[in-house]
Amino acid sequence: MKDTAYGSSNVLIRVYENNLLNRGHYDRMLAADSFEDAVNVLRETPYRNDVDRIKEDKNYDTMLMNELHQTFDELFNISPNKALIELFGLRYAYHNLKVLFKEEFTDQDMDHLFIPIGRYDIADLRQAVRTGASDVLPEPYLDSIHEVQEDYDQYHNPQAVDIILDRRFFTHMRILADETGEQGIPEMVETFIDYQNLSTLTRAMRQNRTRNFLKTILSSSGSIPKEELVEIANKDMSTAANILGNTKYKSIIEASIDPETNELSPVRLDFATDNAYMEMMRNAKLAAFGPLPIVAFIYAKETEVKNLRLILSGKENGVSADGIRERMRLNYA
Image (cartoon, rainbow, N blue to C red; front, side, top):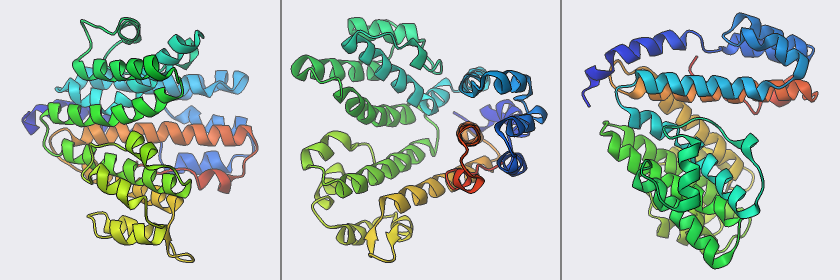
């Protein structure tokens, strides 16, 4: 799609960006003496209409989910490429698929866990999970559903649902990225998958997970072949750092090495990849044309929701401001 097709939508994105919370809002909420005082800061933000209710019932999750739901609905309306919004909201569809399968396999009512975000209604996902067919959902959704059902029919292990759908999510992301036809989007998604694979690999190594586990959980949709990652898992953390340091992610790996042990640290790696992805979104925000400003705005809004949940939960439970701050991520606002 031509970059100029995003002209009107990107004008709206610049307007939406003005309503994002900034560092000043977060600092004032963190410095507040109580949960109620922290919530009061939101009176001067787009969340103002929920302040009195939240102070009374402390149900801020509903407010945050409604905000995300409204954001994605608006982006589906203004974007000239619906597949782009579907791609960056796909995590919610796969969350809902997990809930639906667990309902089916455990015979429990889990309606309270659904997140009403995505291109396709939960009712359409439910029908496909129950019947294995759909006149609405594209093939990648059905492929994911079939794989979960086939595994359960053979092994009767509900815990496998998360593992299979997490891997299928990345496969589906890569397919959608290509289907958008947008320059730079497949590369962005490939990098995101690489970051997740590196995190999964280092944590699995620390936990002494088996090769079969890694073959099951790692994605084949990144730029580093899964077979190479599985082989690295046989090494120690220092050797793994040396091997991965020869990839295009050298700077991230170097930032992830514990200086005391000279070993790859899963915690440091997660921090480094988070920062690298944030920098990617900052650069995307600066694009004058094309789809990247929309992508960056989605990231900024999701980061805002995560930060608000961290602050409000922390204030509710007496966590110190420093304890909350070290877990937060700043967006480009």
